[in-house]
Length: 567
Image 1: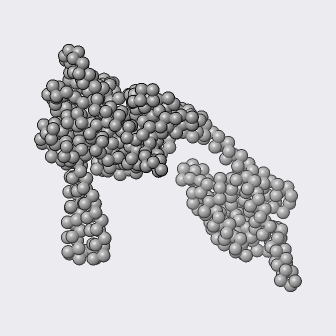
Image 2: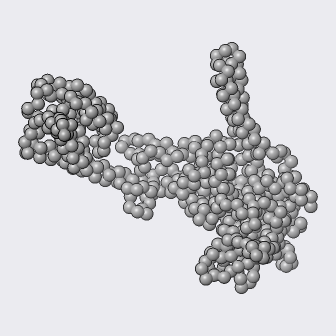
């Protein structure tokens, strides 16, 4: 009973009216929201000076000072919490002295509750510039009004600020931190974005995705070889972000609203849409199932659903099936694969046309070669830098500037970096001097697509499927075979070559001229700085040329197979 009685007396002793406090001991709290506010409004020094003068006039001893930093009052920040915790622990402090109530908090009702809690513990919040009587009901009410008004003022300013930000966005100006690949700067109250060196590499990434159908991990590896490290999740977000094709999307705008930006796009709209349609088609599916390479590539002609694989364990047989409810399109894996091989073989090129095709591919080969040489040059430069660092570390260790532990850790890291660069160089610096031999291999690939697919692993098959049929194929039960809606433009010409030759429909000079156009257009697009280059780059023939280039990329994977080296 005596302990409870003492606690009640102690509590009662703390709840003395402010005017009757014998010794007023304060914790001074000063703050501004930002450096800009400090320069344009009431500085921290001014707040502290006014508080000290008020304390001296009213007999208040300042024991501790808190804040003195940039911290928002819209919520309890770290410094504010630190101050509240210290005040409630210190039995001597009975006043929190502030310049004005909006310096204490701008949280409105939440601030009033905190003030009441402190008051119940014998601690009063006192403003040096807004004197009220904390002991009277009207004074307590006025304190609450001032705290609520602080929140109201903050809300009004927020509305004005948000309105200005929306107007800025609708003018096509991006005011936030610059997106990856851009630099942000402000001039005459307007915001601008400028493509930096990372953005220039992202241009290549978009082209690799659209024209060559590379996966995100493969693109990340290429970018790393050129000096830009980026993870595949971030790259995936970039591919889906419309700001890179010139449009602004922001959570301050209405749902689904896109605004045409004033900044330079990294990729054109057509390519951006094509990339995102490819992603929706399921080509980024990561699960590897060796037995079912056609899943999420073949669609049901009846309902449009993708076919997936399953096995009947009792019979030991594997099947593809459409997962749409009510659709009974089930086909054996053996039949589906054999028919797919036949479909690929239909794109073979008669030997009579190999000569002219070799000339065209020789021209297109130059572009692939230049791309690889650029990556090789960058890697060699990085390799030289690492080798120089290794020599420098060895020298510093030899003369005693660094210890053995630092030497071992540094050398281990540099050796790993050197080994990684060497592996990347080995993967791309193939001997490209014998152009004719490589062209022969590519021609042989075109004539043996069915064999390539049949004898390849899961990833090789997937690459070939994406190359020949970017949007996949349909399986029609009625004709018991495949239907193609969108085939690679190059292979479409191959098929026309083959059909013309087989059906003896005369010469194929007109078809050959198309291929000559491919080579000329590719060279003009890549090398000629003209106003119409962007339009040329998206013509069907130019896209076909880009797809032929993918042959050369795949060639470095396929060329080691023995059956490609002999006819």
